[in-house]
Image (cartoon, rainbow, N blue to C red; front, side):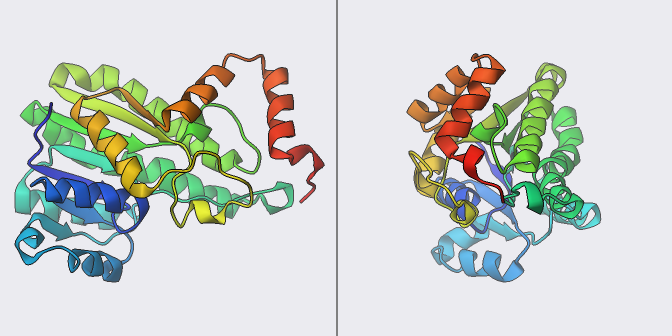
Length: 259
């Protein structure tokens, strides 16, 4: 088991990030919260008992803004030192049927989900290496396993993050740093509310947080959930691609949609 003194979490004002933040603070961990909206962060802080608020530090920032993120990390390090845990959780998704695929939309998704996470991780990494300890985690998605309709940029961004984390692990483990890839299925958040299709085995943010915190404490290389759904998708990866393609077309109804 792991005992963190401090953590830095992006996407902390909603969904998974919000639930993980609440769980860690209630366990005595100090959390630097990053999200784009300062108003939402401070409103979230106000929900905690007064005695817990000293464990929270609002660091409003868009993770795609390197200068802002650098300033946020500097504030965090000055307050509490190099964090024990970095959770790169900020993400976005834009459903993109064929006629809706644009450079601007792809850039937004990839810049947030992949480059924003890499930016956050690379800020904290040098201090962790110098100290000889730390835990880096990034929130990917089960959609990273294989291609899915309407999710070219999203799936690519999450697959890229998974590969980044897997590769990074080889390099930083000798320095005492753990790395965890987190791949959720459908979680009931404002982001998934945009999806125009059924979402099987959807879980609440609080349940997702329990999976994540439990897995991180055990320093698992990958946390994937809900288990029944995630293992099904893992098995689908071994199908020959033409069979997989036909199956997904049928299940999602994408073959009949010309949007």
